[in-house]
Amino acid sequence: MKTGTPAWGPGRHGAAGFALDLGRCVGCGACVLACRMENRLPGRVSWRRIVPLNLARYLGGPTYFFSLACHHCQDPPCVRGCPSGALRKRPDGVVTLEADLCMGCRYCEMACPFKAPAYDSDAGVMTKCHLCHHRLDSGLLPACVEACPVGALGFEDDTAAGGDVAAGVDVAAGGAPDAETRVGRVLRAEEVPGFVDPGEAKPGLVLVPPVGGIRGAKYVSLESLLAAAADAASEGEGSGHG
Amino acid sequence: MGRRGGGAGKGFHEAPLVLFSALAVAGAGIGGSRVLLAATGQGAWASSPWEAGVVAGLLALGVLVSTLHLGRPSRAGLALRMVGRSALTAEVLALGASLAVGALAALLPPGSAVGGLARVLLPWLSVLVLLTLGTVYRLPGQVGWGGSAFLRPLALGMVFGMVVQGAAGSWEVGGSALAVLLLVWVVDALLMVLGGRKLERTLGSAEASHPAVFRRRRLLLAVRFSLVNLVAPLAFLLAWTLLLVVVLVAGGVLLDRFLFYALAARLTTEGEVRRVEAALHRRSIAPQSSTD
Picture: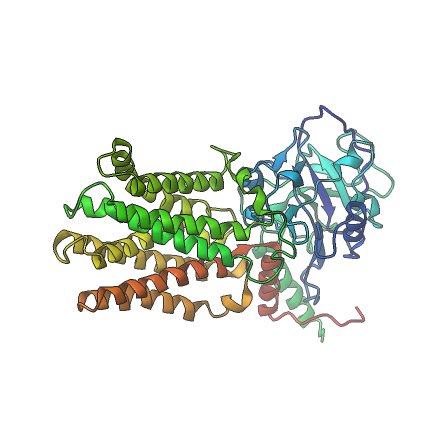
């Protein structure tokens, strides 16, 4: 899902965040590497991570990879808690951290439910993903989105999650679907088994499930996932699957 | 002081916070227990100069130790920038105010009007400190820090304060003050039990900050419970040396604060993924062949 060049710039107001197509991500880590290189992150600091689900390929269960960074929440607990004001949410939706105002108390690290802030022990300050706003301001995509070789990672802004949307479309720019567009229901992150949202921060992440869901089951709850998996196991046993 | 090189990347970086919060609970507990004593008719509503001095001293030491946790201690003053917005700023303000008022209460002569006002204010500011020590950690996703956990510093501080006041001869053992102390002990025990049960119930999707300690949580929590809520009250009621009871409760305060940070567990995607995979496994679903 490569979105087109976002309509960005000073004075823009809205929400922002990443979009992840779970049907495309193969967990290669190119996004993690691109982020490290773009932002010159020191050795022990990483702003993006890959969390695989069902790498063991339990029969009937899906396997996908979460590529996670800061979700630039609508009500970020890190911003609310920061005692020095180093963390702030810009009008364009990006949550930034000003290192010069950070005293390294690590309170944001405790407050963030998504493990976004990372402590740089050499500098004694916190660091975090800033959505490559320096690239956005120049009309470029975030480094991780640009680097994704399969078009799984995208950048969405003001996306109305929960509606039908064609992946691969730049929602903000109103672009048309390309030839390989996969239509999927865009979900709020909390609707996907494996992703945890404590429910207060309103993360900006949107997730697109694999085409067809899990044997047709919608990604609405762990129970539906397990029921579908049990059905698959029963079918496997009935056909003499070993 | 500039940057602390090397800092606390891995390991138990919360160690300075354990010491800080133990000192703050102890100091504010001594100050705040004055409210309980006065309410039961066992003393004045104002702290004595020695009491204020001990409170201010413990808080000052705690604040000093807390700066060791900062990656940039020289920027500690920035903690006051978000008044009215950050719970941590509120905690720092409460501590600072108590420290300043405590110092005035201890150093100004008995006849001083300002000193007198400070000695009346100090117990209430101490209660505020104990409350902010708890509310600062009401954070989304932190399994063991929500619910009634914010009352733990208040309850434990009051237990410690009352015991210290008793050892110092500030109240006569017996009567309403004893009943209040026993009640606070019961409240503290209840909070521990509720917190432990909540932790066990929500473990499925939680990721522990310190897994090695977390694996031993039941033993450690039992030790803490026994120390503060069984041995210390028994020793008190059996009229053991009050100084020994103080030592027991002080040890319990330190252990309690260590466990507060060491048993921190957060709901994370990693934890939830583990839960989903465990559920898939329990449904007797075999791994697919690698040739699939």
